[in-house]
Image (tube, each protein chain N blue to C red):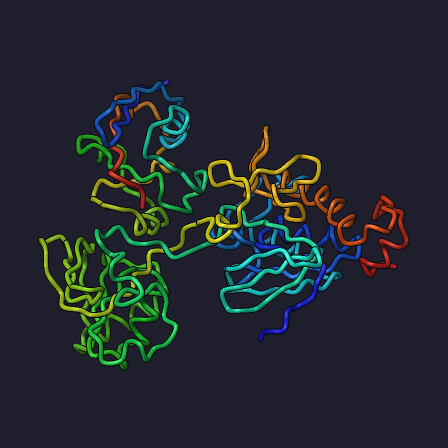
Length: 341
Length: 106
């Protein structure tokens, strides 16, 4: 039996809005644990546009997604948020004592007064390549990540893609697999030039195959892959393989949160505009994931929502305490929490 | 204003008066052309506004920049005339441009 982590608030999503929620909650002495599917903070800012400038953050005429993330991390550091990366929230239930239990796909349990969903566009998940019938092979012959290299020992492996994941696994699995064929739609790669050079060198030595083209069909039975059809510039070829690793980037999906019984509006979570509370009292949704009349998917709107949500969470966590509104500029107690006093 | 035409996968034609400097994606979204998702909002950070430029227009429109070419790796049914519509800026010499929306975005 896993020992649950006891905390005040579980925040799902470590994008800019989830991070800023730590700050607002922290001012009211509420401790946070954050869960995110990515391996680092920043959400879309880190994953989709780390280098791209954002122009509508108040007081920042121009700031990149990564710089915004870095600044927020600096701002919330005094509150020691605990991060749980590479995790997806799997289970959720209300406990008899009024608190909530949240479970990750790795089996960790969290108990908290409130749950704040700040999941943006949803959790990043591997994109399924547009190959008809691929679903039938997923989990048995087709994998979107490598959990154990042994899974590929002595297999005829087809790796599809042109980024670092595809190239790295081509290089790393070559000694393990019986054969490796890399398929990419063009001879240029997004991956690090060093890996690309190594791949071409291995190909020269006859250790791997490389085909230019797109996978258009799969052959096999009962989830056991036997061959893939590759459409290239010179027509179609069939390649025998019994394992496939497609690396087609990430897409965002609401995921298991959709099954919590929350009221949804076209895959967005309906909230009120006073507390940003969902249809389950004690569960809040802020940032791009929520919907209310007039909603704008702006980072600054998410920041505002985080501040108002905090007032409601404070009342849930400490119903006996009087809520005193204070400014960070003048309150010595807030400044103490921020470590500037 | 420049007249451009977006052809949905079912063949429906959307004739649009597009402002010069705007992107083909923005015009598609403004006119609710089905099949253009534009998940990232035009940051060249996804591949969900993919279009096939009409053969006759491919040369005038031009080839994608390397970053766009990278993103096209994630698109469905990529052809030599494939572009991300958020990266095509409307200009005078695109008067009459025709682009086709693929069967689906990846």
